[in-house]
Every structure is written in C-alpha cells, then in structure tokens.
Length: 447
Image (cartoon, rainbow, N blue to C red; front, side, top):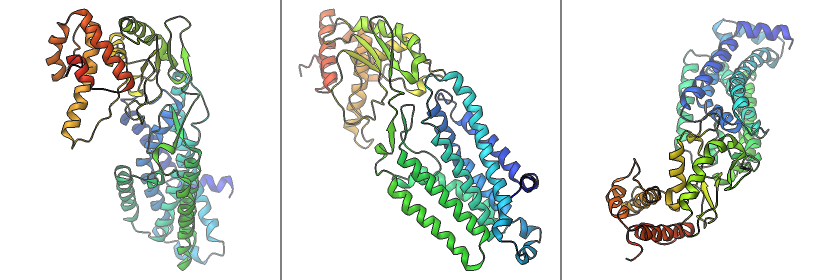
C-alpha cells in the first residue's frame, strides 16, 4: 500500500471525519463529564479518564466502519470488484489503514491536549501509564475494523445506526451489570484505578490480545466471501480463550499498587508532615493546618506527633487493622484536590479533617441499606467523630448531623478534664477499632 493510495483514502473516505469526531467527542467527555475531579493532575488519572470516553467513542468508530463498509454496494461497484483478480485484502487494506490512522490520531490528539496540562501540573512522572492509552487506541482500531467487516457483510443503511446505538447500550449495560472478568472485555478500565494504582500487566496483555482478535475478525469479515466469513469466529474464540484466563479473578488483584507514587515527601522541620510523591504540591497548604491539629491533639492519650497522607481509601481498605498512634493519617482523595494537587478545602477544614475521630481514621464501613440498625449505628459513629473534632476545637461544626447537634450542648458543657478523659478514651478505642465509640464519647463508656 503506497502513501499516495492511503492519502486518497484518507481524503475520499469518511476516515478524516471520524478522526475529527474522535477528537471532539473525546475532549468533550474528558473535559465535561469529569470536571468535578482533577482530570489533568496525574498521568494515570488522566489516561484512565480518557479510557472512560471510549464508552462513547467505540460505538462511533464501529458505526463509522459499518458505514464505510457499504461503500462498494452503495456505489454499485461490488460486482465489478468481485471480478477483479486482485485479492480482497489488497482492496480493503487502504480503507482499513485510513480508518485505523484516523481513530488513532484522533485519540492521540486528545491525549496530547491532556498531556500538555498534566506536564505542568504533575509532580510525579512515570511510564506506567503508557499501556493505558495504547490499549485504548487498539480498542478503537478494533471497533472500526469490526464495523467495516459488518458493513461489508450487511450493506444496509440501517446497519451503521443500529450498530452504533446497540454498542452504546451494550457498553453501558456491561458497566452497570458486569461483575466479573467480562468487565475488562470492554474498552474502559472498570475498577479501582486511581493515582496510586495501575492495571496489572496481565490485564494489559489480556486486553491487547482481545482487541487484536476483534480487529482480525473484522478484517476477515471484510475480505472473506461465502462460508469463509465464518472463519471470523476463530479469532474471537481464540481471543476469549486466551484473554479471560489471563485476567485475575478478583478486582483487587486486577490492579497493582504504584509504590513510587506513594513515596513520602515530608517537611524538613518538626513536627513532621508528609504527603505522597503524587501529591507533593499539597505539602505546603497542608503543613499549617496539620500542625494546628497536632497542637490540639497533644493533650490526649497516645497523641500523634506527625501527620501523613495515606495512599488508600480508608472505606475500601479491608480488613480494618489497628492504626498507628504516633501519626495522624489523612486521605487526600483526588476529588478534594485541584489539577495542581492543591487541597480545595480551606485551612480550617483541613484541620477539622485531621481532628475527626480525635485524630483517627474511620473504622466502620457503610453497611447494607437494608440493615436499618447497622446503618443507624454507622451514621451515629460518623457523627461521634465530628463531635470529637468539635470538642477539640471548642465550637460546633457547621455541618453537624441531627445526632451530633443533639449531643453537642451536653458534651460542650462538661468540665475540661472530663472532656479530655472521654476524648482520650475515644482515641484509644478508635486506634484499635474496638468498643462502642458512641457510648465512650457520649457517656464515658459507663453504660
């Protein structure tokens, strides 16, 4: 295939229009749908967000390929080309190459737009994110080639719109209802992928094999004739047979920790305040509020002497383990940071966050909504953590729940030494995740 022939296909086919659509829709999804979080703060988070856009881009690529596939029938050239001695793959190579170039370039343009912003924002640069867009680009090529094959086989005007809508609904259903390995047969990265995790190598290899198999099946459909088109089933079956066993069985093992992203970056003076390397820009804004929290916590039993960011979601990390007593852990969730990893919360809000639970992280998980008693206990414990922060500050929080608002006047009226005693007991119990925390704070554990 010469560059001249490929250039002609890029001009006369719908490939260039598809490339523009991929750029426009890809930027719209990344910029608009994920504007609440720091989309351009880290390489991993941005590349994962871009993969989410494939839920919309893959149906477009599939439909565009199907529309392109009916070109010979639409122009009345199918009978003529069938009599030409040239192999069918030689005829399909220019148009399939043009479609692949268009969708890949469009996807890379969106990646480049994001990369320019990430370079200026990120403090942690690494290569572990590169397989994420690589698999995404292959998924688009596979979709366009599969559409090309289906369009060649079924050259109806309805094929492209039906494929587009059907693929969109199918991917949405997969994301909503999928629970096992089948989730990763879609183009998105469904799972706990964030700043501190990357897909396991086995997941990347499995997805590369699967999308390559889909691409081969599309080419077979576009070039084979008669019963030979059933050969397209073979790469699909082989792809499934190889990819599914490669994907780890549990969601926790499909993603691996990025240890370098979690490396601590700390203040040079005491008391020590640390954040992760990925969120190094948060160290300055956090230091003052963190030291204020340590000063207020100092009179308590087993008081912390330092503050550190924990690179884990305390509500998802299982099982609960005893917390260290010498450090006050804080989770700087991505949705509480801006694109430069600066906290969106004010200094006072950061101090309150560190004072919650008398300087401890939460022990309980959100129980099933069907269990009313457990749900009530969970909310009371959360409000007790807010009460502990208010007692240390000496004033109520602006967002007290009903239980905390009811208990606050009584707790605030207690003598200072009694408040200190209850807060110390509350902290010790919270560190080991034992005892009735609500009873300890509101009644001194007397009941």
